Image (cartoon, rainbow, N blue to C red):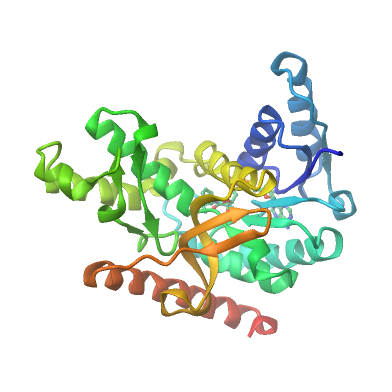
Length: 320
Ligand code: A3D
């Protein structure tokens, strides 16, 4: 059986890291696409030349032509502009909306059967726009944010408790932005919910609140440190986890920006929710019960995303 084909639309910081990780994990043959001439070709060649030492079997190629993504099984989209210090994700809206139009049309024409993972910001609006422009089935188009936000939350919690990250699970819902909702009640260490760990004296409520806030600001913290771009190692690793679940039909339960129609009181809307990812794409949206405070946070996050989608429609009348 032929190896799966993975098309990476955008060969910048995240795109290059995605290609490297896909190769190391032998997920399939990789095509890097970018409008910047030489960048995808150079990264593809560099990674291919690491193959003999890393001992992976996967081909790498770079291109400026959408015809080369033909028949891709997975497309991961990072094309666009990343945040600079002082820029919000929403500042990127107008620029990246145009990029989603060309990418969506390219995928529709050459890889209509692919599972598509969008990473370009502002995430929840861009995944919606990419789905609209590509016309692919909703369950085959999703956005990566929740896995990353949860990973950041898990990392901070594991450091606070001085335990293995493997034993920390965390739940982050809502849009990928300042209004994201890290759900403390559903986050655990080896199955023990965080509120119980506060009662057990492992941490204090104040420290937990600070970790929740640091999670919300996780992207900005890296932007502030790097000064010339945004995070790329953890975002790429998160998207690879999602792609692997699809390609190997793992049916992992992963939070991502998915099309929610019916659950959470939403009628046809992209937002961060727990999902099951398998060979069918987004096979299930997991609806959890929320208390009043959690629901209020989720609602305001949904409202923020609705505002972005409205702005997209205003910028591009064809979306309205
Ligand atoms: P960067 O290194 O700038 O790479 C973007 C690439 O896109 C560049 O190589 C560009 O040449 C290319 N590009 C621009 N326009 C097009 C086009 N029309 N077609 C094809 N390629 C194009 O950025 P990055 O890799 O660091 O980040 C990529 C995106 O991910 C940005 O929008 C970030 O804001 C976003 N991001 C999202 C998260 C989430 O958690 C959702 C995290 C980190 C970054």
